[in-house]
Image 1 (tube, rainbow, N blue to C red):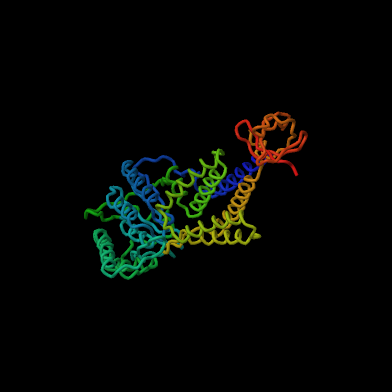
Image 2 (image 1 turned 90 degrees about the vertical axis):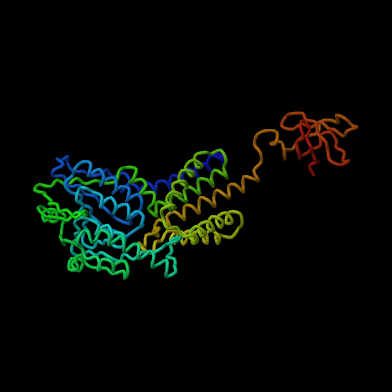
Length: 455
């Protein structure tokens, strides 16, 4: 197999391997079809939504859209199940605003056992018309923090008071209207207080502690609730039919892209694709794939708390891989590059609030093949510079020929036979050649060769 062909085969195989890894991570969530119950009359329809994981813009878009749709369908109830460590303040406020404006009653339910509605989740839970929790769950710890590059930043006391007071006032604005204990709720913001399900019920932060969604719906049937405008309404659920609403395909795809593991894989595929295109111009496919993956990674970087030190370690790893290919270090630089990339991946995305980041398995699984591909590709590039030209006039350079006769004694031009062809040739200096002498081509200048005697 020609060297160019099997080099391209290696590149394609490496990219396919990394893409397959990303596809495997996506297979369990990206293409999962939304599960919906059978169509029901609006008078008995309960729309079930989910908050699982960090609260971010894509999740906020999903909840706001579905709350508005449930209102348009005149559903009897909206049930939001929750298990979240918190998230972005802007996304939380969008969700709370949609809940407060909903004509359809909204029930926030922390479930299953072991779940939590912390930080931004606490705001969402208390904004619901009915707040419920499963036994063994927790809520609270809603003190605002500021992050830059995945790290908590220290701010002066005046700014901290401003942020805390703003969050407290926002919480009180609807907790009082819901008839809950605003003073106790405010301590979740000012003192980072947290409560178990029973403690939250005893402090009048929530309305119910229920073991399952079916029991919750049963207890809600006939219950009178207080709406935000001060009016009262009665929930009637004699025969509730639950319609589970999941994210649509676009939202699931974007949620998949911002997963830390997937983001890291997309970033590395993007870098590898562009690196391959620059070192092997004309292959096209790696450049196209790499460009798309890099743009998706940049989109994820806009939403994720990125640590600049992690990016620096990944860039250092790439430099070490290239140097390993150029210099005989017996693998020292290559191993150092793998270690640098793994460490960079582990600290690349790390939110102090949620603890989410690139998993160790994904870091190792990407760093090793990336190192092998980059080192091998660079060695091919370095070796190709010493390969002899195989087509065109330049292939004559280095070839040997035979002097046939002197063509012009005044100019020192000789006729030589190279590859069965007769060429005019000149010798540097004043050296003379005899007919039948062996010569080697040193250069090609138009239709004249530059030759030297073969010693």
